[in-house]
Length: 167
Image (cartoon, rainbow, N blue to C red; front, side, top):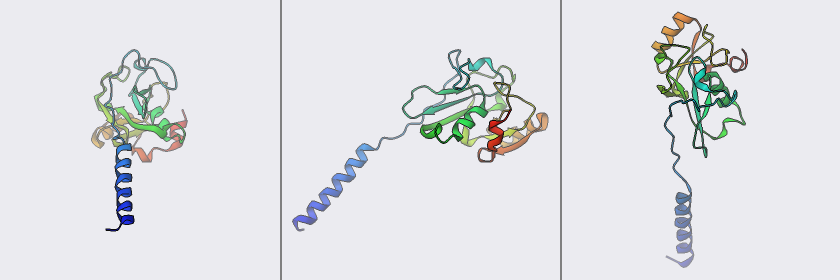
């Protein structure tokens, strides 16, 4: 092998090793339980004091989640071009586990936002009294909720933007 080819091969190997060393594995954090110290990102109020399902958003470089007193607010946050650019994961409460709408469990159960099925336009109101995007881990529970409280069952990608901005 001539000297220029060896140099080129060595250069490529060094570059590949350098790139591999620079790329960090992204660790997706697990959800954390709500506490009295969990304060809403938009409302700056204690999240557990509000009715309905809650959500938490983890961003790259931030150790603790941003809390939202409603799922609708977290969905809205995820949809904003400037806000959600560093989101690692968003968790929402599986509403099938909520026995008392006014006192949802503090420890979840948490599901990933993108995996959830939602009921919109129901008679239930979220954390700040606004329309809620009520999340479920499966269609059967969402349909059961819809039959009792009205609304429409949709996937994350089918939540209308104007639903997120109106009350």
